Every structure is written in C-alpha cells, then in structure tokens.
Amino acid sequence: MELTSVAVPRTYRLRSEVLGWASPAIRIDAEAEHSALTDGEAVVAAVSHMSWPCPDEPGIPARYFWAMAVDTAYQRRGLGRRLLAAVADRARARDEQVMWADARESAVAFYLACGARVAGEPYVDDGTGLLVRHVVFTEISPACLSAGGSEATG
Image (cartoon, rainbow, N blue to C red):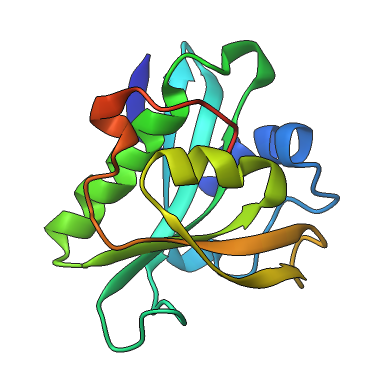
C-alpha cells in the first residue's frame, strides 16, 4: 500500500461510504493537504489536514485533521495508524505541537488508544451533520503508532 498525496475529489467516494456524509466536500478542503493510502488506483484510506488553531489549546501551533476514513474491507489492518503517522510527520515538519480533530463518537476509542484526550462535550458538526467530539493529541507521536492500538475508521 502506497502513502501519497491526492486531489480531494479522489477521497469523496470513501468519505461518503465510510463516514456517511451526504455531501463529501468540506469548505476548507481547497486549502488542505489530503493524504491517502492506495491499493492500485483505489483510495482505500484517506485523511485531510492543515495548520489550524486548536480551540482547546489556544496559542499553540496545531494541525487539524478531518475526514479520516478507511474502506471497510481494509479496516483493522493498521491503516488508520498509518494515516495518523502521516499527519504527525507533517505536524512535526511544520513545528506544530498539537494535532486535533472533530471525531465521530464511534471513532473516539481509536483516538484515545492512540494517546489523544477528549475535550469538551459532543456536538453536531455544521458541515457533516454528525455527532462529534474534539480529540486532542499533545504528543505528536501518537502512542498507537508503536503500541499497536485498536483500529477504527477515524
């Protein structure tokens, strides 16, 4: 499986199928980086990310990530961890000290296993309509990358 940068439209099918988004495009997609794992031409795992302040860690350089999805046929094989590692690599390269996301409730356990903490109460995301919570990594070396944490779709 190859880790690569992709144009965001290549992630839309996966976002719709795995995340259940009616409209897979997000308004900040045009400004973001989109990392994917591919099996041949097929995008089987993807995440979008960019420098963006974390409301739970104000004033600290941060990397926001969203739309992390792993094709159901490829789940529980470590692809979510590989995507987190790609985001962490980019954060370190940009001297960002925090990574954070609006995580679906069904993915929170995965992020906790990787060393994140939950911040705040659940809320409905304006862009996706999903119930989400902030997950925040203050260590830019997610624990699950070396500890083999549980896998979810993110």
